[in-house]
Length: 380
Image 1 (cartoon, one colour):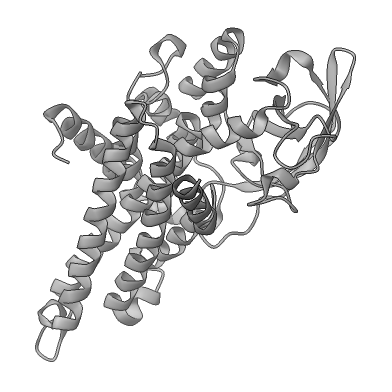
Image 2: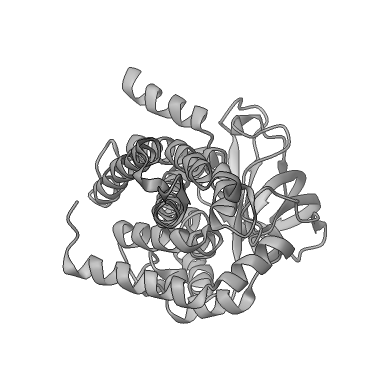
């Protein structure tokens, strides 16, 4: 896709911010120590990145899906952690609110997310209900004008630094499978809510992940989000946009791997010449570049199709996530191979990119779940 000057300017601005502000020192510190860089969070809010895709009437920038994709790609090219900082309020964090929230809920919560004043996380996964979200056992029982929530969510990105969570819970146990599930906006300071210790992860260490445990948590009925017992449909619609965001994140990581590999292969000499002169290396680089460009075309076109309301856009979002996440892992492996032993050393960027890339085939629906979605759409 040939981008218009407007989008090219956006790309340039996103890239300039990422390269200038999210320095190697910050990246290294977060990778080693974990945690969350609040200064960067507020700086991103100041420039409008946290509300890039959010409607203007709720404090956002009103950008379309393509502008959001460009932002995530360029931020991930510098560091996937930066991309997640911007991705969450524009995607999983706000998606359910935008699609199913009442006007009162939208006006209250979304401006807080766009401004960076508050953070929200998406709490769907449970220890025994990952890919099979319909197997969740978290319960919400009506009691007067409140719901009492009990259960445990796991692998919740951003939970340790969030103020709220969109929690999915079973409200009608008589309905089986994916039915009878509802959404609630849960204030994480409520009595009975506890946040687990941040997980020690392979990658994306600057964005903490933990459990959320709910023990007799009373949530006002006004915090029910969307229609009762229809939460699973809402989750899937929200995940469509999230999967496109992961695809863009994968694209950015892959582009960084390619650029690092080209640079290194021109500098590194063996047998009296740069290793890029060896066909084995140059062909790997050709393969990497071709796969990246194929993913870019698929992702950009899907972004446009999604905003146009194309009926097959949800399936294409899964295609993007499936292809791009598998692609980035192949590309990252080649990047480490091109770097040889140095690719195994933490001083080289490709070592961290290789670790960061691994999550992309897992979160927001594994590659196998994407295959299920794609084939299910084609064969129904």
